Length: 486
Image (cartoon, rainbow, N blue to C red; front, side, top):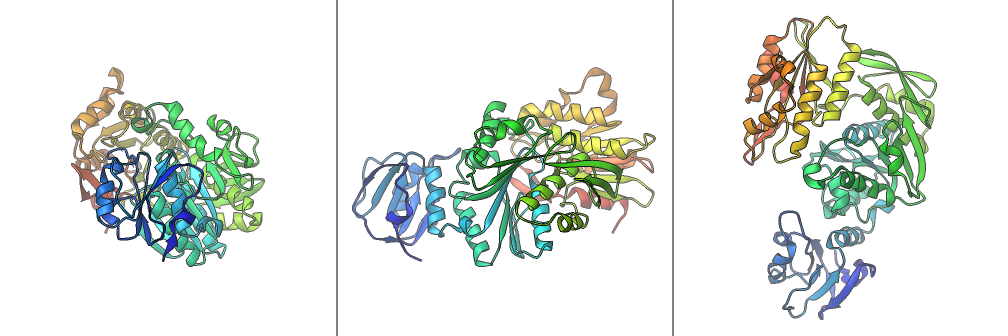
């Protein structure tokens, strides 16, 4: 594929153009290692490295056009240099143009918020597949183009890959794409160039302050997504979260709300709760679901509202919602032969942990113990670590603090940060075991028949990252092993 580079780069955002190259280009790259002769190289100012320092290497490898925020001191012959206001945004825009604006050829719905993004995006994918459509999915767990799936590496991929995947979806005949939109992706302009048909806001709680520094900046990042929605799109927000109203201030899209507590465009009430599911009343109609907890009721409500906004029939949507199954690693239950219950959940923020424990509290009789195994990730927001311990203590009879993905940090130091959230009166309820396998084993050993063990933090992940190396580790596998289940 070859295209005239001048047709790919919009005039808006361009400050200056230098150089003599006027021909066609063969591809786009933002990593100098991927540059081939005749490519456009986009120099981005990243968190850990500045792409501007790789411009000479990109030119040496044959880059015909260089897009950058700062022009290099020496310009190579027969290379065009385009100075722009924002390289990140320009990468998204020209990537969209390179792939012939795929988001204009299918309906893309973005899901953002602290918790619930994966569930809502994945369940929407499941629902619309059952409705008979070809559908794409971009999520934390996996990327799916129609029926072809691969493991995801980021919640939201880089701008170039997003446009490539959207183009693949168009080629495969997809009608819809449901994608998670992380706050990092918004700030880094990875979603630039996507024409969204709709946006969903789940909630906003304590997370990612290692990156955004303040809660206000974290909120602003999420709101920026809604600020960019066109008037032709819809914006569905959770009115049970006080930030839902903030998200759509000055938003041009059609605004709707969903709630499990109050009057909203889409409303739901939990009628019965059991470990194998809930009976819900959604907009006046009773629906049995395979999900547990009010947070999952809210997720299903967002899926339902989205489907109706995309023109689907209420009765058919509700029928299919009763057939949907939980996302891997989200409140997955495993029962032992002697009646112990273990629940694996991805809860890795204080609010998510609170929600899962609240869901357990709704179902438990009060005679059984709740034993929670929980850790916190390394090289991430340290301020949430003591809060995680506090929430675990509030909803549990015993808590085992352990390792999650320590990454480059000392796991024992992470646990000490969590222990700061344990008051003197609660210390007797807490055990600290650095080895996650031993922590799960201990929880199972301490549990009596009928007790509930929550293993939180990793959910679907099948690895543990230690000093930059990913070792195979699956919470569910470990539980099944100690339960004696093949």
